[in-house]
Image (spheres, rainbow over the protein chains, first blue to last red):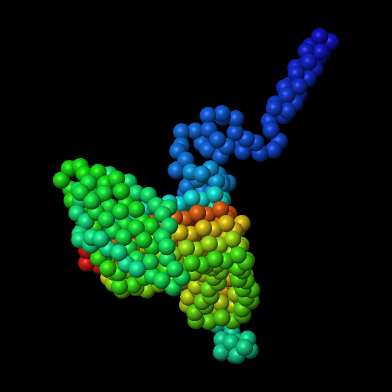
Length: 145
Length: 267
């Protein structure tokens, strides 16, 4: 193989490795998704969303916290909509014909955190399953007392 | 001392109602029941004073819609109370159970200031609740060998200021202020259930609630002035390990919660 050809192959290989090294350097090694470079909104807010939108439960894969109208942190972590956080909440119920006057002021300065960590398997085969046919419930209950 | 200058129905056509709580103070000697001072002038401006002061003004008449507020002519019940808590309130329950059958029920509650009031008739209620302590409720459960369990109900509740007021039938006034300056209100649950095949048939009801200030007023109240101020961090956490669970877990954290209903009385 001519010397020039081998040199070309070597150079191409070197450039390929060099490109890979550049790409590896550019790829963040940690989780940088939490960094927010947008300047038109506060930290923790998505673009184009109102503050009120954040006063609701969030799944763990969506956001690790939100903020209420007072810009307090509101956490809601869970695998479903089981966790609810509210800075301020008002519920008023009336019936037709009723006349009610309500003057309410609510101020919240604290953070709210509602979190559910549920380890549940939906499969029919479970670990530590007790078989009802293999024990004497009355005897065991007596023993437990 | 009661002063009721006018006690008729207040009939106005209102589209815009601006209200504020007056800062007026009233000379009310200890043990004396402070009364009401109700004025309705020709400009349809309504002032209700007394019991700490509820001032309604700026009613603008627009359109033909009519709004009637039956202000109580005289009150049958007057309730005034003030609650202050400065210490920390904590409840802890650590339960390890074996061979549990039937129903399993457990409640853990920590409340700094609590008031439950049942009234019937025209009433006036003035209340103040102030908490500066931390309020925590912790539950740690490990239930094993749940082979014939029918129901599991666990409630963990932490509330700094709580007022439940029910007026069965009346046109009443409520004036209440709640202030929570403690650092934390925490309700936490750790639960492990074993015996999962049976649990798929059982009803599991788990509620974890942490609230800074809570007011619940039912039925009788037509004029309410509510002030709630919370400074504490509110945290409700449930860590549950169970297989085959079919029912949801309710976990709620609220800074200020207000519920007012008037649905069971004749208007």
